[in-house]
Length: 286
Image 1: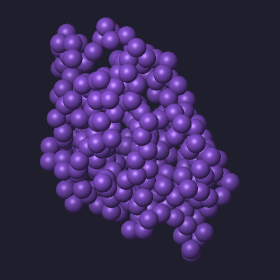
Image 2: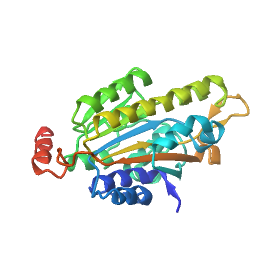
Image 3: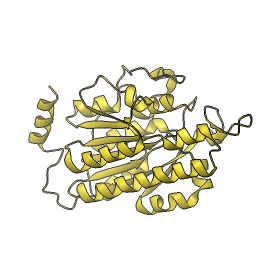
Image 4: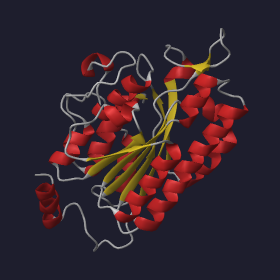
């Protein structure tokens, strides 16, 4: 069964046991939902979504050693197709609404605030507390504003990861999206498979492993989902020798996501099904 990146929002919604964003058309990823059931869970309580920019299936094939640890520490490897055009704001709009570009309206490189229903709106309505941590002025930083949730605009990837580590350890956020862009910046400046870009990709994948360890340490009492969800891939522009993306070709359109489910070790701890907890969050959102 073939999925597009627009399946991400429905997968998050179904994992939390809440409604899908309005008009969402894509299917949730069945293997993720099946794994939740296999762990004897009705739904998850916490979710970390790590969103590295421009990491496609072609990168995994070119640098398999960089992904070996991620594969060994996650449960599911899922191939997906990006959306057209495979540009960052177009992709994240689809990924977080469950809608095709022609429906959500972002069809080129632009960063308007999305006024339609997103996974963040669904979570907020359900008493689930989301947060976005992203590089300042990036697409992810700007497009989902004006909602009653937490936003952290950081200087660059290192600071975004540090803030996410802090939130995992110290906040009561239930869904945290951490966006990184070092690899995308590197591929636009040089050969996407050269040493500079290779180092950027290595840094991003190590960032994910850092966050995975923080989830293991600080969310061990919660049934949780961790996601590695890039938006698109990239190719070498023959005219410049640098990386680029936006074309309907496999290098840009094919991505691979990784998912991991962890069952909480103390089921008596606070759960999202606890009415007092849901009420508390709803009051906080007023």
